[in-house]
Image (tube, rainbow, N blue to C red; front, side):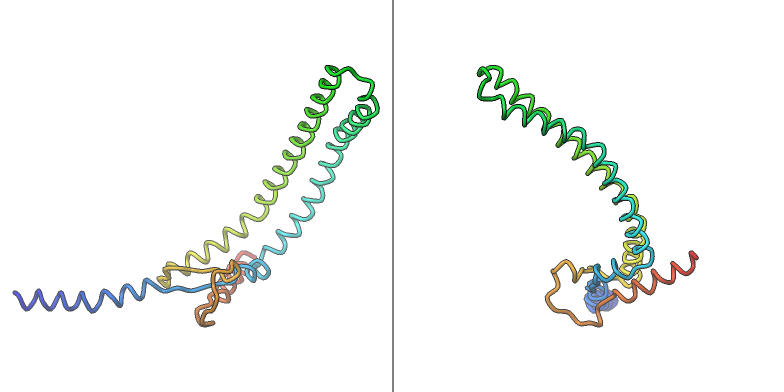
Length: 178
């Protein structure tokens, strides 16, 4: 009984570091290269650029009247402030500040629309990339997948770079989708 227990313990002691070493693998990839070369991302970027141009034109036409109104108010205030009573000057300054705030809020709303549209367009392609990376991590037992483009990797063995494998799988999935 003691021999069996000792044999099992010895086996566990020998196997545990090997299992930990296998699960502790660290690899890296280049997310910038993935963004450049992944199928679907270039088309998504082109679509996004068209959408952003359209949104920018819409924002410009929507914000132009507010901007013109603010500028007219500011110009009138500058011309008349010397002859205004103190309480009237204060009211005009508050009106100007309120108009400026309206303009800033309207601009922020357009920026939020643009960010939401950008996310809507790019998210599916980026999600596919993340799915492939996660599948590779699970299949190969990688504990960490680092991103060389993020600047955290100073030096690494090129054999640990999985960028090419991610691209190969993405291209394989893209050709199956076609």
